[in-house]
Length: 548
Image (cartoon, rainbow, N blue to C red; front, side, top):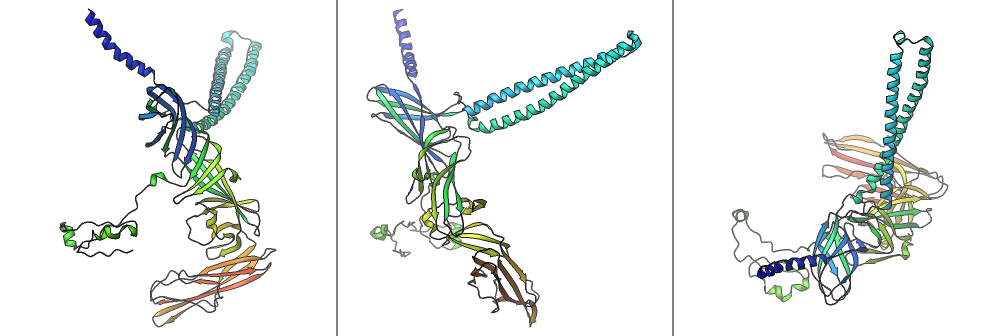
């Protein structure tokens, strides 16, 4: 009996130990301190603190995004606490707390649903009463069978008329109120659905840690990880007050995130890096020439070791000499400005924002202002009447690389009026950055064919056509304007076709012969009218048709 008691005791001791260890597991919530947002993806940094006992500890850290790259998790501790192992998992049981706005919308939806039910009940009751009244009146209206006098029947009819009118009016009003309540309810539901996208995923990220602490005390934790469900897009607000003033460019960012958690008052850094695009720079291997018959038969090449090139010529040296083969022979060659700090390294550009921001996890873009810049520009009026008869005001910015712009859309405001959207291409190889500020119809341009100069002739086996166009420009503004006018003549792709620009053409400021584009650039005085001629001939074989 004593032996049996000891065995039972020994059996339950390990269970008690496991139960005690399970009871010692602590769960703490984390707080997002800072976020680095990339064009696609973001690195989140959480902090947390917990009291640990000397020796082994098991700790769960909650409040993490459920959508993370598990290979990117990094954990830092204080007080010499060692993380012996960790595991990332999902918490499907804990419901997310709704924000005040979402809770308010939910309450409003419930209130409208109750009101709708009350209105529908009233309509149903009044409809039933009307049906009962109708049946009762029909029965009593049979007259002599019920022994009703004419006076009684008239009273019944008057009562029916009055009561039926009241019920009909109540039913009509109820239906109108039902439609209005239903409309309002649908609006609330649509708004609630939009606001609760971030709460649609009820899971939460949990980091389970096994820790070893040298002493009893408090440990601070810093957890960082990468998630792909975030990003930012640069855009700009370009403001031009007048053609004789500088251009103001406000750089901004649209930040979005669907990480499953809200970013409440966090420090945000915007980076142009793309962590997921990491690649290894390619190197050349030896290119051995072989007959196609050998390749098809897959005949092996004796002593054909693959010699790989180096990233740098300095690495070749004597080491590569020892790897040379006798055959073949190789020859190797030898405002917010106060809160935003912009830094640049060899790979990317970052914007460190000192002000805390709150970005909800519903995927909606939040605008953040980065910096304001002002730069001188040259203003010109531009027209290519063959393509578009409108005259556009352009702002040309020289040395625009100093602005450190990124590719993105730009909203243009001219003289206090929004004129449209354009695109800034930061990868452009053009010397100047050109912004289209809008159309100015006060500079009129007309392009018409000059029939007296246009002709078609036959010379032997060839056809020769002459084309002549007159371009008329008038400045109806009350001030001078710098005008850029462009037109086009065709370019031949074969020796059988020849194109010649006539000497009668108004001498252009520039003639890009490889594109067939002529440019006239000049200053126009107020009220001035100028004309330009474009005349060219095309000669090609008879019987052929060209896209003229």
